[in-house]
Amino acid sequence: MSVQVESICPLGSDIFYDILRRLDGATLASAACTCAAFSSISKEEQIWENVCSSLWPSTNRDDVKNLIRSIGGFRKFYADCYPLIVNKDLALVPLDFFLEYPEEWPEADYFEDFEEYESSAPSDVVSLVDITYNEKPIFSKVLWGISESDTLNRWFYNSPFHVNLSNSDVSDNMEKVIISDADGLPPIESLDNERKERKLWTELQDRLRLSWIVVNRKVNRAANVSSLIPLGVQRHWPDDKDFLVRFGSVLPAEDILPCQVVECILVVKFRMFNNTDSGRVNLELTQVNMQLEDMEGFHVNGRNSLMVLKKALSCRKSRNYSEVLESCNLYSRVRSEIKEEKMRNESRVDKMCILSGIVAIVTFWFCIL
Image 1 (cartoon, helix red, strand yellow):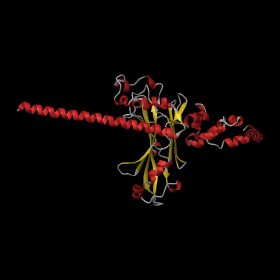
Image 2 (cartoon, one colour):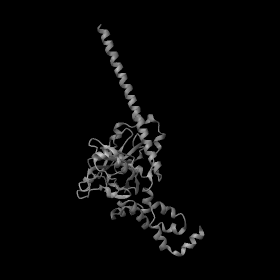
Image 3 (cartoon, rainbow, N blue to C red):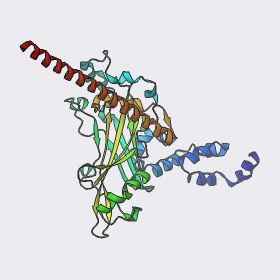
Image 4 (cartoon, helix red, strand yellow):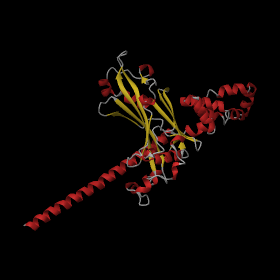
């Protein structure tokens, strides 16, 4: 290997730079380990800026570039946001723990305000959202702060946390995002045919990708809270014209919520419509949103959501997508088990109530007789 390195050294650093700037992040990181020359050049911020711009179009804006430089630079930003969040800690928690909140978490303490407001504010959070279909960018948005958060009246902190990037609501001047056969969408002659063939369902599952990077300007850290690959696609009742594509991750909530972990749910919504020009079915992006839910399916309020997102910036991450999906599937299984166990408990209680009622009626009639 040393002979090969010496033989290419006369080519000069300019050629090395030109070679490395064409690589993606993972390949660039691997190339940096091969020789001292590559290692030195791969530390150039401009190279990593190109990598981030190619991977996340939302980082191409001047204000976002300044933000990334202020929190440590593009190389650090890529290292924080390229690997995805993995959380398998809930497998170690007994199922009975989730069935009811422990006594040390009184309701007043769970819902009322406290001093964490000052360390977790909506204005500290920046969302960088990028959606691609068939490896082509179709949507990119930067949200500074969290809209509709009223820190003076504390409405945001005690209400269900919800970040909405609806295509129709973000900006009246925003162009519609349409996916057609020109983008690689399979030809669908009518909505009725799609209900039978389910081609669009398969396409969205296989080719749609979402990146949702959360940046906290106060702690100078960032993380990608998306699973990148869809966790599921479903038709939206009742008109059956909408597709809900679900992404997300499992976030740690120790010392924040009694359930220990929460699910970050990211939903991308598309609506099918007949294109009058081509006569074929197209998809229009109508909604992109985020919300956090606990193990029982309840929405997490704004205050606790800010704390969970802040904690997620330093949790374990992985570049192995299968491990990320396994983490999310594990959460779903545990949540299903909790739901089934609660239903069994409620069924037992109902049977006892019915039995008690029958005994009371029989006793009453015996007394009368």
